[in-house]
Image 1 (cartoon, rainbow, N blue to C red):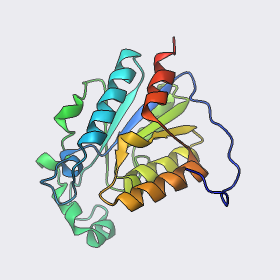
Image 2: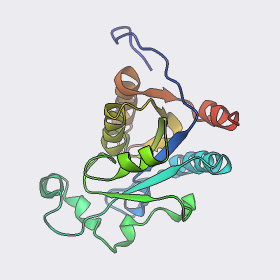
Image 3: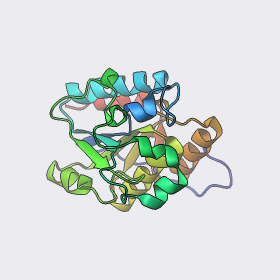
Image 4: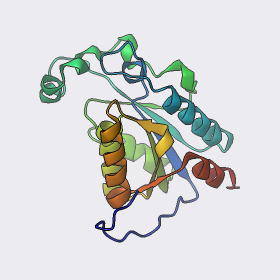
Amino acid sequence: MTDKSDLRTGSLDLGAHPALIVVDMSLGFTSPDSPLGGDFQRVKTANLALLTCFREKRLPVFFTSVVYHDHQSASVFRQRLPDLNILNDGSQWVTIDPYLMRQDNEPIIEKCWPSAFFETNLAAQLERKKVDSLVITGLTTSGCVRATAVDGLQHNYPLFVPKQACGDRNHAAHKSNLHDIHAKYGQVCDLEWLVTQIRQRD
């Protein structure tokens, strides 16, 4: 994961009360029928395993979904990536993938931009729940996962990205962005290791 030219990194503490942020696992991104989607069954399976673990431990879980309520929202972003225009309020594409079995107590953070933090109330919700670290998963690694990781660090959270629980249509971009996240912003880790760490908590 690291290269000899990378800066030296220190280890991070998962904390006593981590939160899971599942980024954009909506049908618009998880379905192969969507112009934004792909074959992400392995990512879905990894996320369900992690969700099950967080639910067993009653730790906070947040989902995000890109939702556009009008033509003006994120207009330049949508001009650059016109396929985003399918993510309109009320569309099937903004629905969290049913495979993940979202619970009623797991909020959906609606966003218009890549980061789950930008122009949302996520930071305030994390503070209210006394979250002390973040686990970030979802789609896509080179886009909204990375942006959320960068902003998570900028909110001063230790953060962990299980590599099996995120994905990208472009595999090279997936690998390079995992490298960047691990080299600078957070700790990229193995899913099994992370599940073990969480299950060992009281």
